[in-house]
Length: 92
Image (cartoon, rainbow, N blue to C red):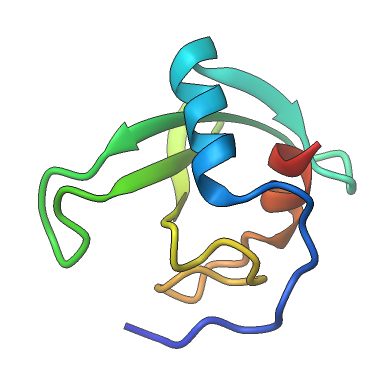
């Protein structure tokens, strides 16, 4: 796994956002740069993050990125995918 890049200042913590998504279900959102995406809360079932909370980011019906608790407040996730704009939208 890669290291996370750049620190982001976000108002809410990961658990609060994850819980909101868990209660509300899949949400359609837009990044500050006007990229549409869907997000929902899940628990991982395999891999190095097995059993952890995750926010899944979907674009055009396909998974684009995952945001784990350790990725929150960074501009990239564990796998180097840029997640900053998605975190910004989720933090609103």
